[in-house]
Image (tube, rainbow, N blue to C red; front, side, top):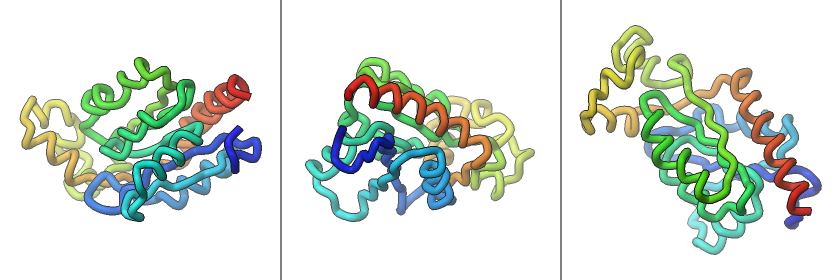
Length: 183
């Protein structure tokens, strides 16, 4: 066990403060993760952490959680058997799988995915749930980078806590198995 574990799995949340793909209800997600049984830490790159600081934080975690983005590249610091939980915004399904879903297999990590639904995306609030970009992102993107960029650069998410709890429970069970295998 690592210092500070206190018998609970450690979940590190990658916080996105600038740009897009922010988790708009981050505090509620943290509270829910704590209620499930996690010891929650927040990785905020705007705090000027060094690479060794980030390594220590991630390497001592059992779960890394974040919305799809560059912050999830920190998965390389996870120990084999740890869990990556990726929140996948609208329109980024295949992109998310390629960038983080598939690589977890080769790294010996467990993978849990939470797919954002239309009512959880700021794009639906702005464009309406009946717009093509919300109803059928794949058709809207149609292989065009400029269309995919909209989903990457103009979207934030507000997670449905009821649906997300199932995802956290799955990650918790996997983290406990990992903890038991390393103790």
